Image 1: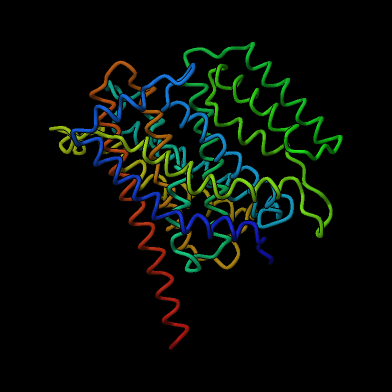
Image 2: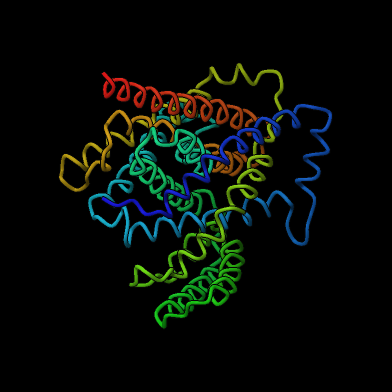
Length: 386
């Protein structure tokens, strides 16, 4: 099996930017709980044109991140790690389990209460943080497992976006959805006629983002849809438009967009009673949903798919590494916070409780996943040297 150089470069860059990402998380928490907290929040709420700075970051800059990841996934499906049908189907089954089981756990604890509408909170995986942490492990983890987690996180977040559109969107704007469809037809036509210049895709992509944002569906999905229309080529010697765009996006995404995103979205102010809130049915639903529900759902559905001969385990991987990847998928963070805000629009106190529980669950999942994968690698390294 040949792992493409582009995916290797993607994870090498993510590894080197991982420390910067974590620093931004810590810095954001410190600012939010200092005398600068109010000023920082006012900055995020400041209107820049039609939207706040916070929205430009979450719906604008992160669309570029989704564009990059979409490009990576498309190329791997066409010519790389996910080109095998069984390898490609595994992340889909895994993501399905990783959404259903956490939602069921949350609903079990909170059915019939004022919190039950938040069942979608533990369903999501934060792509930026999960990939940053697994990339920090370097060669300790097979690239195939990293690619599996990437594909899983993409499918997972797309699933979360569908859930938001159906269950957490008050109104879908049909006219804007039709305009999204029209732009997609234009992009597909450009691909069909082998138009190679990026500008002819990026300009319609801006309109796609605008229409998607106003349709009621989360705007970042526009980045993934745009990525799927960027053309490749049949030649191994000539670099394709898709690969050229990847090269251009790696540095700004990993060293600017992801750190800015972390800085803006870890802006959680602690107050009395938040720790007590972790030991309630609401806290249990979020924490157990993300920490246990994710790893159980992902590995259970993966096991079933493999036993039914519908999928294959990632190359050179072990089930213990799949458990580690499942733990990292429990880093819900951004999309989980977003769903929490939608679930409890009129109750700031519940929103803060949810944010804190998400932060704790994501930290637990991240630490457990990192140290499990590191321990597995160290164990096999010592066996090889004996």
